Each structure stands twice: as C-alpha cells, then as structure tokens.
Image (tube, rainbow, N blue to C red; front, side, top):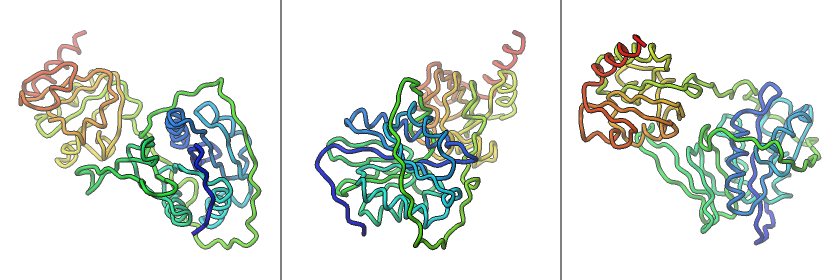
Length: 333
C-alpha cells in the first residue's frame, strides 16, 4: 500500500479523464460536471488527471464544465492505454496530491485502474454507480448500483475509508451545462516510465466507446410494458408522432423490444419532451429512467397502477385501443 499524508483541511474532488480519437469522452465531461456540483456544496476544488498524447487542445474544454485545475501527463508512451504506465503515472500523482475523492468512468479502462489504485491507497471503492453523492456528514461517497441483473439496487458507502473512489455509469449526473466564463489552471506532470514494463495492454481507446442510442436524443417516446396489448398499435402511434419506441424491461422479456430500447435502471435514462407509457405499471426500476421527461402520459387498465399517479395525464383503459385512437386522431391533423 502506498502511504500518503493527509491534512484535515478541505481537499478536492478528482476525475480521471479518458479520451477517444483525440477528444474527451462525453462521460469525462459529465463526471467533471458532477464533481463541480458536489465541490460547490463542500467548498472543494475540482481537479482532473488527463493522460495521453497531444492533449494541449483538450485542457480548455474541461474548464467550462467545472475543472479548476488540470494535471496533464502528455507523453507518446501514454497515447494508447496500457495498464502499467497509466497506473504508474496516476500512483505518483495521487501520492503527491493525496486526493480525498476520485471519480472514474465505469469503462473497461477504469475496471483495470480503479481497483488497483484503491488498493494501493487504502481507499473505499464503489463500482458502477448509477447515483453518487458526497455525504457531507460522514465525508464519504454514497452511491447506488444495480444488483442481481437489475432486479433491485443497493446503497453503497465508502464511510470509514481515508479516501474515496468510485466508477460511475453514464447519465448519473446528466448532461453538463458549460460555463464559457470559467477558467482554471494547468500543471504538467513529469512522466517517469523508465522502469515500467508493460504486461497488460488489452484495451485500445476505441474499445470503450459508449454508444449513443437514439433514445437519449429523442424528443418524443412511446414506451410499452407487459400490459400494452397489441404492440403494433404502439408502433403506429410512435410512427405517427415521429417518436422512438421504447419499453420497460418486462417488454424485453417478452421480446417486444430489444435491449437498446429498455428504459430504466438497467437500460437508458431519457429526458424527452413527451413520454407516453402504455401498459407499464410503474415500478422504480422503470420510472428512474424516465424521470427526466417533461410531460408523461400514462395508459393502464388497472386504476391502481403506480404510474398513473406519477403521470401528468393518466388514462385508465386499454392501452392498445387508446394508442390506436390517438394515432387515428393525430394522423388527421
């Protein structure tokens, strides 16, 4: 274990950045934005570790989304990910800076780095967090992650550890809102890899690209559940509206939709202007993914279905019949 010296003064929240094809990944910018939100509450600074080659043009993209200082390790030997060089550079940096909170993207790259760094520095580690916050009382990370294939989610904490690490899934903090007026500092890291032997080099930067499904950008979504009835009616409504078709995981189990169309904790988190839920009961696993919708219309045959209480407009009835009638009315306009 690497020994580091900590003070009792407020410290910083760090983000380990990743790049793809010479650009910052969207997840990196989201994590910096999330760190900024937490740092403002705690009175911390946001610091970013940026490793790679040819990084000079990327530093200024980190300030608008929340970075206060960027530590840059720009070296040709870091151009492509190999575990040992990255681990050495980050270990040296963390030993010198003693970060209290560190966030990584939940990617194959961080699957190799985060556990090893946490072990070296005696840090608590939460992996694959889909919700993460800094607890100001216990001064630790508190996060949620899906368990047992998404059947439920569990609350995790790093309380009791001296430092706190987490790998974070996309959409945990939402899209950043850049502030063009923000500025920060940059510090160059001296890279010393003379004694480093590369043993693990299995991840190319193209390997952990996160696909951007149509659902994320959809302004209108028609979503189906187990009690949607005739799914062709839902598809016709979606086509009439120019909407994307989606569904709860139960619809995937019945082969009504495919994996990329699942909305919920174990699927996509969406934020359309209009979300039409047909035959979806409304358990937490699903509603977590649709909570960003601006207006929700829910149709369900059971008047006690939870989603009816959460919707802006609730209709008790046959989802397929309602969808067909809506499509007919809209097609005439």
